Image (cartoon, rainbow, N blue to C red; front, side):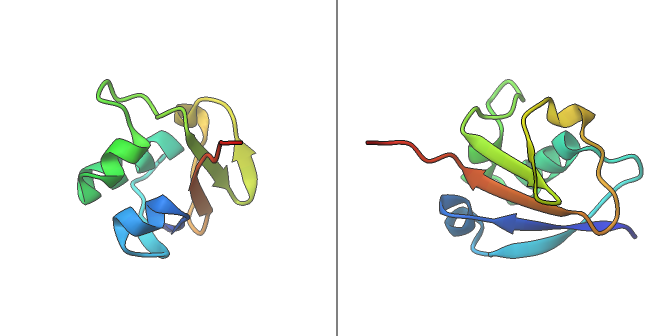
Length: 94
């Protein structure tokens, strides 16, 4: 079965308890579907760090696919076997 590697950073890593994991992909998978699957499989608190209650992606999530920053709609970002997904909470402060 096709799979991607998801790497968690900062507080996301703490919420999951893993630095990375291999996640199986359904056919025709997109980044948003992966986020939904992770939120459902891992539950709270990770789910709340990825998606809002209305299902939209939280504004402070920074996503990379194969080291390319994703700035558009994650529904339009296709995933393929072997892709590497990096998830970071954005950092702010003064």
